[in-house]
Amino acid sequence: MKKLLKNNFREVSVIIAIAIMFVIFGALNSVYLQPTNIIDILDQATIYGLMGLGIMLPIITGGIDISVGSVLAMSGCIVAKLAVAGVNPILCMIVGLLVGFAAGGVNGLLISKMKLQPFIATMGTQSAFRGLAYIITEGYPVLGVPDSYRGILNLKLVGDIRISVLVFLIWAVIIYVLLKKTRLGTYIYAVGGNVEAARLSGVRVELVTTLAYAIGMLGTALAGLVQIAKLGTGDPTTGNGWEMNAIAAAAIGGTSMAGGRGNPWGTVLGAILFSGLKVGLVVMNVNTYWQYVATGLVIIVAAYVEIFQSMIASKKKKKA
Image (cartoon, rainbow, N blue to C red; front, side, top):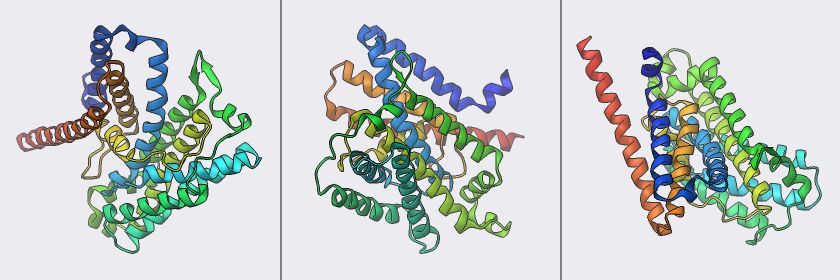
C-alpha cells in the first residue's frame, strides 16, 4: 500500500484535492452537488481532458503545442460542414480525426525538421489553423448538425452521462498503453528526459517528436467531435484560449513542463479537478473574469508543486 501511494503520489494528491473541492463547494452551495452540475463537470472534463492528453505528449518530449484550440475548431468545422452536407457520420468523424493527426504532424515536422522552437512553431500554426477554420465556414457558425451525427456521441450511458465520457476514458487507456507499454512511449519519455542521450542511443528523435505531436492532436480532434455533437454547431471561434485549460489539466496531473514525465491518468484527474473548480466558481456566481485568474493560479501552483516534488526527490537521492 505504501509503495502504491509512493509511486502514485501526484494522482493520489489530486484525488484528495477533488474530494476536498466537492466538500467545500457542496457546503457553500448545495446546488453544486446536484446531478446536473456533476454532468456538467464530466462534460467539461471530457473536452479539457482530451485536449490535455493531446498537449501532454508534446510536453513530455520537452515541447509545447499551443495550437490545440485552433485544431479543435478547424477539425470541428470541417466535420460540421460534412455532416450538414449529408456525409455519413462515421466518415465525418474519420475525416475529423485525420485532420487533427495531419495538423499535429505539421507541428511536429516544423519542430523536428525545420528546427523551430515549439512555442514559436505552434504559435504560428495556432493562427494559421484558426484562419483555416474561418475560411472553411466563411466566418459564420455551421448550424444544423444532424441528429444522425449528434446522436452517436450524445448517447446516454447511465442517467444523463454521455457516451463521450467513456470515449474520453478509452482514449486515456490508449495513451496509457502507448506511453507505458510500447517502444514508442519509451522513446517519447527518453526524448523529453535527455534528447541528446536519446539520439546517441539510436532513437529517431525527429520521427518520435513528429508522432508525439500528431498522435496528441488526435485527442484534440476527438474533443472537437464531442463538442460538435454536444452543441450541434461548428463554430470557428470555439476553443479560443482553451490551450490554457489543456495545459492546466496536464500540469495538475503531474506532467512536467520540463519534459520527460507525465501520466495520462494524472491528466484525467487534473481535468476533473479543473472542471470542478470552474463549475464551482459559476455556481458561486463568481465573475467570469476571475475564472481566468483562477486558471493562471492553478497552472502556477501545479508548476510549483512539480518543482517542490523534484527538490524532495533530489534530496532523497543525495541522502541515499
